Image (tube, rainbow, N blue to C red; front, top):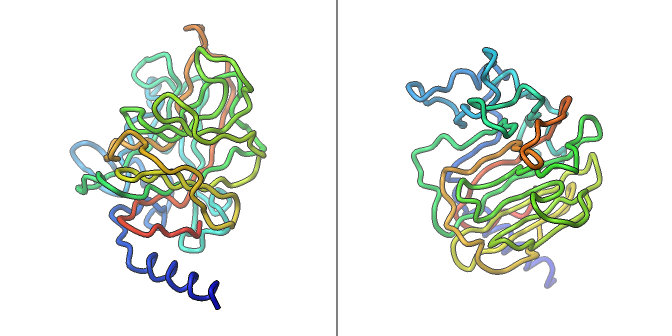
Length: 254
């Protein structure tokens, strides 16, 4: 009986939450829809301006939609996105390799909020663990999800971790092909929620993420160079789905 009551209140809390920004890809038909966004035509759920652009590429050159790129447990979404980088992924000629999506919204997305994202390091074209990959982050880098050898540090390179305030608050050696679900709880009290696959998310860290959220939330691949040397790379892919922001709850089903 107690479990039923707890389940009811968990459902009620989730049902009362308001989605402030919905980044799930239900309104996108093909990757070409990402190309419709510009600073003068801010349409769709995402800003799409950070990608390799030195050879006439478009956003759709680096983004692929498909049901095979979403967490199967996420029933409210028809597809996910594959984010690609390669040796041509230099944005405006910089040394980093980048393909990133940011929320397109008039909401500030700041305060005590819950930022949801599920991601997979695939078995095909996984990122090279010798390089630091920033794969979910705010521009201020107050809370980042990272993969690989952190720049200037030693340790196990094949690590997926969440870093805030310069410290890792959760880490795992990821299983390729497994979906990892995250809720980044900004504001106060703040915290981190995590699960894998279809499992409900559980809070694994309570405390400040050192920021109040914001719309400068990057979803995608940013690979740092090693000691400034030219990057050696073929194709690297990451999969994302279940991306949205809610104001309460949180919803703990992926």
